[in-house]
Image (cartoon, one colour):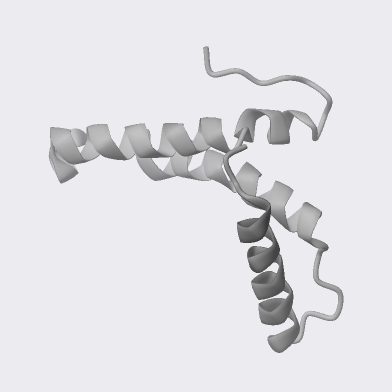
Length: 93
């Protein structure tokens, strides 16, 4: 994963601070929050952009949005994070 340990630790601090400040009694630890974040990328792909009609945004915007969300999907190893839920490896191809 391309995420540096410095960025991950800063995110962890921000997550814990935010969760605590809004009254979450037991926020998830950083590793669980990071895994959940990686899994949510699937929403961007399957709900956020794949069903969008090109007429709504134009070809260029849709093409670049698909490229961005699929790059994130791969970079975050979203398929592997989801597969860990039931032990099966998921693949888009």
